[in-house]
Amino acid sequence: MDASDADLRRQLLELLPRLRRFARALARNTHDADDLVQVALERALTRSAQLHTGAPLAPWMFGIVRNAWTDELRSRGRRARLFAPAEAGEQAVDASAGPHTEVLAVQEALARLPAEQRGAVALVLIEGLSYKEAAYIMDVPVGTLTSRLARGREALQAMLDETTGAQR
Amino acid sequence: MSFSDETLMAYADGELDAATRAQIEAALAGDADLAQRIARQRQLRARLQAAFDPVLDEPLPPRLLESAQRFPGAVRADNLVPLRRTPAPRWSWSQWGAMAASLLLGALAAGLLLAPTGGPIITRHGEMLAGGTLARALTAQLASRQPPDAPVQIGVSFRARSGLYCRSFVLRDKTALAGLACRDQGAWRVQMLAAAATPPGTGAYRSAGSAMPPQLAQAIDGLIAGEPLDAQAEAAARERGWMP
Image (cartoon, rainbow over all chains, first blue to last red; front, side, top):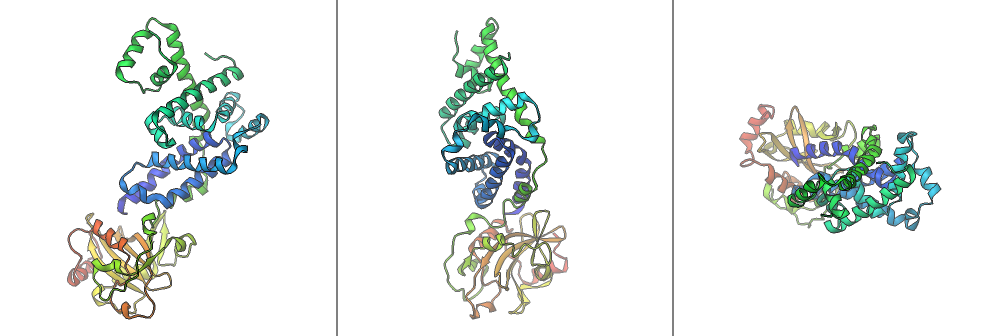
C-alpha cells in the first residue's frame, strides 16, 4: 500500500545488481544466473505480502534467490552436482569474465564446491553479509553456516593454491 | 596461545566477540605465522570479490528490470483468498466485505488491464494510474449523485493521513474491478485493485460501492484520517480539484 510500494520497488531495483552477483556465484554462467534471478523476481511478486510485516527486503530477496536455486538443483538432479571438469571449464567462460585467468580460476574453484558451501561462501565472502544474515538466507543455524563456510574456504584455498601456485 | 582456523576465520570476517578479538590482536604482535594465517583468510575474500564484483557494473538485462518494475505488485498474496458470497442489501462503507471478490491476478497477468494507454488502468514508470473512464469518474463523479448504471461507481471518498484525497471505485465492465486511487500530483494513483464479483442481474447495483472486497475496506481503514467525506465535503473537494 501507499508510499511503501514505491520504496520497495526502488529498493529492489537497487538490489538487482547484487542479486545478479549472488546468482552468478551460485549458477556460474550468466544465462543460468539471470534465469535464476528472473524466477526469484516472479516469486517475489507473488509473496510481497510477506513484506507487510516490515521485514527488510534484502535478506528476504536473497532468500528467495537461494530457494529458487535449491529448487533448480533439485529438479536438475544429480547432473547439476557432478560437473565434469571439461564441462565446468567451458561453462565458466563467459564474455564478461574476459581472458583473466585469475578470475576464471576463482570462478571455477567456487563452482566446484558443494552447493551448500558455495552458498555460504557467496553470501559471506562475496556479498559481505554477517554470519547471522547468511544463516537466515540459507535457512540453517549459524553453527551450520560457519562450518560450511570454513569447509568451503579450506577447499577453495586448496584448489586455488594448486591452480595458481601459492599466492601469499 | 593457539587459535583454531574457525576462530581466525571469524576474526577475519569481523564476527568475533570483543574478548577473543583482543586475545588475537595481542598475540598478533609476536606471531608472524598467526598474521599470515589471517592474511590468507582475507586474501581469499579479496580474490573472490575481484572475480565477482564486475557483475555489479554490468548493464541490467531488460527482462529483469521489467520484472522488478512490477514489484511489489498491485495485488498482494493476501488478496488471493476467496471470499464468502453474501449479498449486501444496502451500501455502507464498512460493509464492503460482504460481497464476493475473486482474483484479479489472472487478469493482470494476462495483460487485460494494463494496456499502456486507453484502458481504465494505465501504467507509467511502473506505477498504475487511472485512465480513461475511470480517471474521468474519479475526478468528476459524486458518489452522492451518481446514476446507478454509470460504468464506474464511486464508493467512498476520504482524506488519507498523508493529506491526499482518495476514492474507492468499482468498474462495471467485464473486469468487475474494485480499487482505490489517490489524487497525487495531478494523477489518480491506483493504490490497490481487487476483483469484485457481484451476482449478475440483481438489484444490488443500485447502491453505490456494492461489491467491495474486505481487503479494500481494510486498506481504507489503514489510510483514512478521520471519517469518510459526506456529500457536502465530497462536492467541496471536487471543487478544489482534489488538491490536498
